[in-house]
Length: 120
Image 1: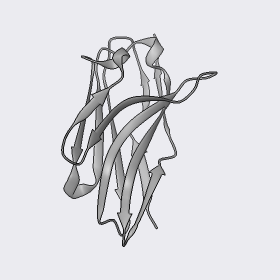
Image 2: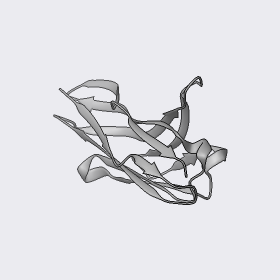
Image 3: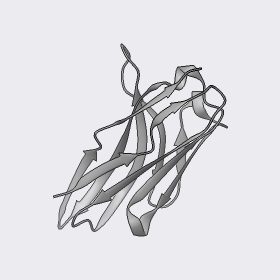
C-alpha cells in the first residue's frame, strides 16, 4: 500500500511565501516523476511543476521564476517553494507520484490535496 501525504498549505498574504511538502510511503522501489498540480474553484486541475528522478524539471508559465520544485529521492519526498504569491495562486494543491514501482507493478498516486489561499 502506497500513501502520498501533503503538508504545508495555509493562508498567506500577497507577496508572501509558502513551502509545500509531499512524502510517498510504502514498499516503494522507485518513483519516476513527482510533482504538484492545482485546482481552483470552477477550473480544471493544472500542472504547476514536475521533477523526474533524474532531476529534470518543468513549470507552468504562470509560476516560472516564483516557484521552485525539488526532490529527495532517498526519502521519496518532493517540495514546492512558492514565493511572491498572488491571489490567483489560490487553489487546492495536489501532490502527484507517477510511475511508482512496487515489486513489478507501476502505478500513479495522488495526495489528498492541501489548500493554499493567498489573500489580504
